[in-house]
Picture 1 (tube, rainbow, N blue to C red):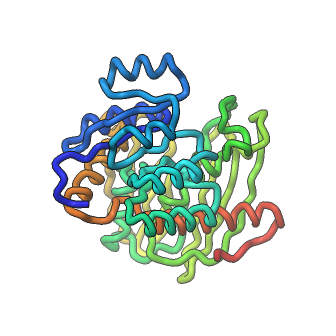
Picture 2: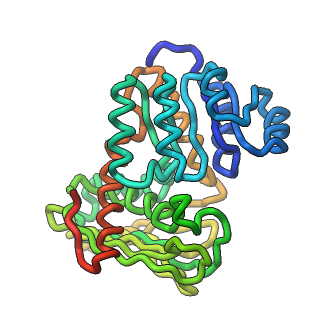
Picture 3: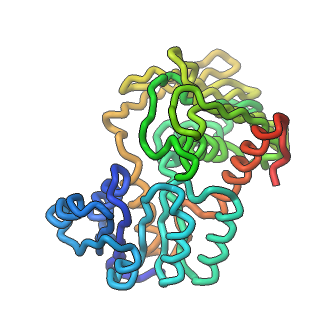
Length: 332
């Protein structure tokens, strides 16, 4: 795809995340916003004034008329699979919001269609660009804490009720699709080991839909690493991160504040502290788009490959099966 002067992107669905996509496409050198699409006509009037691009209420019409290179799909997640297929068949590269699909089978088919069409297929796994994820990944990679044998990441100091589409299974809602894909993906960034077995429990605590609002997933890897991710309804939080290695430990408290401290203490007792101010690092999409633009113009693979997301979905599929049958499940 290299050697283009401008790479045109159309955005479908202008909710909170989709609107941000449109803003950051326009703000990224080398990228331009070609069109936007949404069913909400009042929102489209606002978008026309804000972005100065053609607007559509029909995804099919946008695909036929937008003249873009790539389509961003930011709809509710039960539509990601079918809309990605339509965009690829119409000759577009695709950036789909997380979760990429409903299961590993859909991901495999999306990969197959992208290869057949010779098009980019990438996913907005924005947490790969978060400063805590990047710092911890690099610290582990440098061997500061030795061989990591235990990893933990959790979202567990929230006891609020959701009332949007994400509480319903028919829309592929639930905390696993919402946060589980982020947490599992972040764990996978920390290791080159292969996941082998998964044990999980999914719960619905206070949300009034039929999808889970809490979960715990435990992953055993092929060379002994054990990782745990969870999202719990809790008044008191646990750590946000803990990485235990043979030479030290990394820990991040889940303070809920605007500044977090990533603490690393080695076996010698030496401690370092890295501060992350979320008022500075409030947005992950700009970094993703800068990375995407650079790779587009250099003819390189996308920053988030669908193959890497497939591993994530193999774990999630195993977690859902484990929850159903009540025992650990092999990752296939």
